[in-house]
Image (spheres, rainbow over the protein chains, first blue to last red):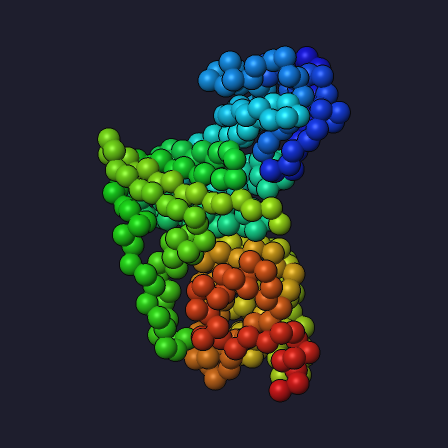
Length: 220
Length: 109
């Protein structure tokens, strides 16, 4: 990939022309990591032409950034750039631990606020633990796909598994406990996920479960 | 996760550093069982240095609390803040366990 240039911007930050290295002014620059919004000061380049195909860089194999929108204002073009991390794991806890590590690296690289990192960890752990524990009837090895996408002020986490049909949206609320001795707190993980997310979606297609959780990213 | 134990008056203070999640919950349970075998049954779990807890973490705290109560003791928590505190609130754990601000606060009673 030649000479790599890495520029990681705090999420939601806008930087001016002076702070942008010349390579950043071309949307086809390689090795440039732009997360969140970046103000690019080349008025002569119509960024909209590149928006549909605008893959601007690959910093590391795990991290790709895409232009997903551009608007012109008085000081230049403002690009909205998305970060995306695609992972696939097998249904065991060692794989889960590895995935959490990779996801956290991605979120830290993207300078996402700490509360969002916590919530993302909770969503990943609760959903994947549920899938590993309950989705598969046999002892076999199964793949679970996870995609994290950062775009605008939203972090989206998508899960796909080929296990038995299960909608986290329909899971019953945990029962209120009156005493610690009779308390079992079943369904607490899903309850936490539903409470902490901006929105959740579930669909069953081609004998697969598709679950999507969205988190709003507010600057801290 | 790192876990350490210290005596403070009637309490066995359990200091947890790092994460209590699906991966580390079995270690927490094992350490608590060992402490109970050695005769402790009044635990104060100090979470001031715990930066992440999931439902698996809450479940193992609850299990230790049940065991403590069944043997005539208690499990209480302290040092909750930020997202860890929020997770406790959403889970309704405040009505199940006594929550103190700090080990000092618990030692006063």
